[in-house]
Image (cartoon, rainbow, N blue to C red; front, side):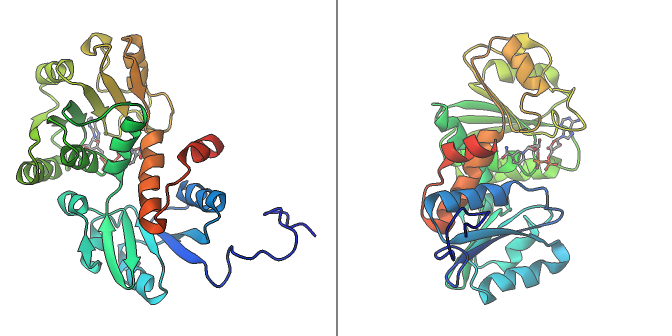
Length: 299
Ligand code: NAD
């Protein structure tokens, strides 16, 4: 009889058997995540005997969960809030970018040695490359200083951005913004600055001089869908890139303002999301994620 889920006749071998590699996602809350759907479909498409499962783990259960990666010989895990910084103390090694961001979203287990990586910034840079834009040598204005903006700034600097001009409000993320500026100065040749967003003249001038404006704040997503940090189309020029890290809604207010200005290259955060997953996928499996297929079936 045909299995209703797999369409396979008879018993299934080579998939969820005694040889299956397990990848986790440790965060809380996390049941809403698209990552299991993305990775499991990519494993199935390539015929890889891996499976990806969500585990509701907060800071309180994190040590035990990371120990279990070694004990159960899992291939690795993703980590999300509230564990991205907390997890570092339980790992053996960090990638240069994870060290600079002081945050990890991917763990790889090599025979009991756990290495932490951050792939969000890789996803950002790669998603731009997919559109034919190389961050190398470019000037970027960046709003935000949190979980998305930090790896975006760090990876862009590591990948040769000429200058990054960060703008943020003076809220709880301000010290993180200052740390990011310091680590970029210490570890790369990228010129980097931090300015308060309340200095609107400096913000406007910076965008006018930039090759790319990236918004990595929570403005544009629920409950701020009707808001944008740039509402005047004349601030943009047509040849620049305007990138909103938000992926829901698909077209944000910022993107509409950029389109009204005639900006040719306006992108949402879906490409970054898929490409950060693809970078983790490669670290675990050594294979390229079939990203066009994933985009087609899921997003
Ligand atoms: P976060 O809470 O860590 O950071 C939010 C940032 O927004 C902070 O710098 C904060 O100062 C700023 N901010 C908040 N309110 C503001 C306001 N009124 N005016 C100006 N700035 C304000 O959140 P995060 O995890 O960095 O997420 C930020 C955005 O990035 C979200 O929209 C999220 O959906 C998106 N994101 C996308 C991806 C992707 O793969 N595409 C990955 C992670 C996050």
